[in-house]
Length: 425
Image (cartoon, rainbow, N blue to C red; front, side, top):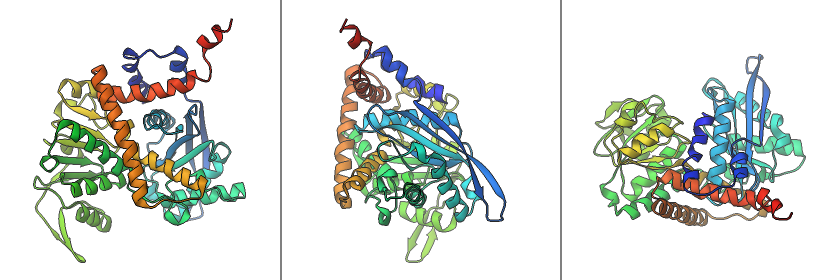
């Protein structure tokens, strides 16, 4: 997976001249740590889980990246995600490098108390390499604000002081930021709105299908529907539902939360009434004839095996790495635009940056101010990337990587390179 992730850099070097030292630095992570985390289970037994933390590059600032709990977590995946975070933070113009962490575990098999012990154990295992000016974790797949709160609390016990800026994505009462919960979905919508403006779209005429109806996918769907987009399909790990007339996003999410399954419903008060809809598989959702296909689940969802079946006019990546490089080529040849993850899902890390700033300053902003600041950054960076794509006649992904790599290259070069030292002889 990491080798696939690095392939994203190859088209960049066809358009801009990058110092060979920059290429060397960006080809390998700075630090990779694996730790065994013993956890006392509710039945008294002891289980040992494997945890990871990869700090890819800190040239632009302390590393930043989420912690995910998933049975498929491994070092290769975490390294790839930390690489993407490095580029993403540069694309957003944030003073951070990239990192990522995770634990190989199925959290659905654990009780809440066991998840708390695991989360605190993760911080004990990696506390020596974390810090508000060193490496700042955040939530990711199957982790949330509650888990971040436990982790921040455990770090304060170890450090013997309150240091809320050690972790972002915390609950509001534990120094979290307003607007963080919906930031990834909100940021992706700001990018899509700019794209729609460039394309001259009439938003009310556009249909959207969303693979992945978790936090990011739900908030994106809710906010998009409020603006007039027609959300016709959503999916979770169990399957998908489809109604060409449009779904009631809030009611679908409420029903999913209460019943752990997807269904198209209309809720009034405490009663939810079923509506007509089609049940689909996740694979079938990907091939729907819609204007925008939103990928908000996991990586490697569109590959060279199914890329030719995609009918959407535009693909929006909210998940990390949901389209492989080989699939990118197929989509591009079929005239399907891909709005890349390093731009589209950077709203989460941007508001995490806002939380870090607020924690360090001890001064907190209202949600309206957070959303306004987020919109300003997302619109600015999206338009810069759209302009680069036009200038270089390249894909949006290549333009986004050009944008991020140029910032990374500038920071690396300005610390000194071969050319500089040779000029002093």
